[in-house]
Amino acid sequence: MIEGYQPKIIGFLCNWCGYAGADLAGTSRITYPANIRVIRVPCSGRVDPLLVIKSFQQGADGVLVAGCHPGECHYVEGNYYTRRRFALLHPFLEYLGIEKQRFRVEWVSASEGKKFSQLVSSFTEELAKLGPRREA
Amino acid sequence: MQEGLTQQIREKARELLTSAAVDCIIGYERASDGLTARPLFAYEPNDVDKLIFDQTCTHNLSRFLVDKRDSTVAIVAKPCDSRAVNLLLAEKQIQRERVYVIGVVCPGIVEATWGQINDRLQARCQLCREHTPPMYDFLVGEPTAEEPPVEPYHDVAELEAKSVAERQSFWAEQFARCIRCYACRQACPGCYCTECFVEQLDPQWVGIRVAPAENEFWHIIRAFHLAGRCIACNECERACPVNIPLSLLNRKLEKDVLELFAFRSGLSAEALLPLATFKKEERLGMGE
View 1: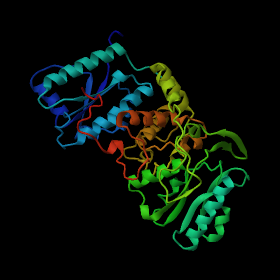
View 2: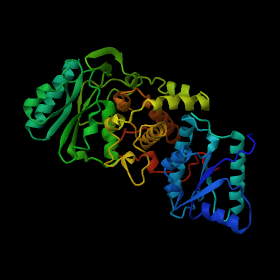
View 3: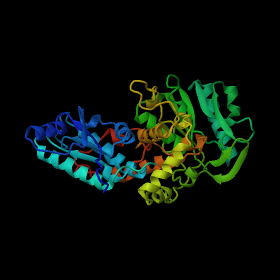
View 4: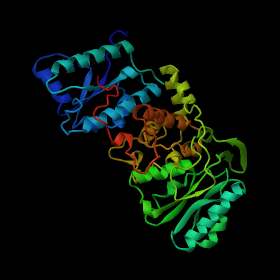
């Protein structure tokens, strides 16, 4: 592990679950690493693969997409599309030379502040072990 | 045998134009090098004697169907081309009653450049399993028995087996050559957006400069926009002036779509495309 290295995580959180979960972590005074930069999106289905690629290109060490649990989407079925899209993008990223560990899709409900905190902690730890992305 | 194909295509084309069943026939004619083929738009019965079909007819003519969606056309389609017609129908880009498909039983297309023909089949044709078009209105040639599938993804698997660092350098080298002429997009029957994301200015996703990051962005998103849609005609790779192995990107996604969703694009005009649908009960290893 590189001394003093702090990975940058871009987190796309859906307004209704992921973001509300992060908010709950905050109001419950549950701490989580400040390595995550949160971008609020209306639904995890809004997250275009283009945004993920752009994040990596602009220097993100990891990208997190957090949405409602399947079956609990605020828009009923948005996250089912998310699931398919990223199930396909994930191996493609690896194929292009972006380590599998650098991308995560997680389901975090509005009541799961604790889960959100643990998620960001474990993701940060894992990325710190992995080190910065190698220059091509 | 191939002279027979040409004759049958001409007869059908003459019949269609004479009876005014269609406004135009999109087919192939001999290019001015006297060896290779180029697209032909035949509007008059007199034009049909220019039509040909042989192993140099590489273009995927379904590329032109979206431009011609307001008239009634007949198209000469190889199996891969007819899969593209199915894709366009599935995506509601063209109307079934406005397109007449003259399907051709394809002997495989050879490698050819301007003024020069190799006898070797193109890579895509060496891997091809469908010599009879999956859809047509009129079939030219004798349907052949399906051949046993060859291992179609051996080169993809080879690249997958390499280390992350090796893959990263491999793609960086490939994308560095790109001059962003967008010939790959122009050749593709699936790339029909009137405004492509690379041309959007607000937000400007991709800068116009030819630079590594911009090139990489273009190629990744181009490939992903065709995920579950690409019909493997490989015209993008053939059109590429700097020989970027685009089929390695397209076929990786094709392979994963097949594994994850058991889907191959273009086999039916009614198909629901894998990223435009879902199954509630599936798991796919996301967020568990």
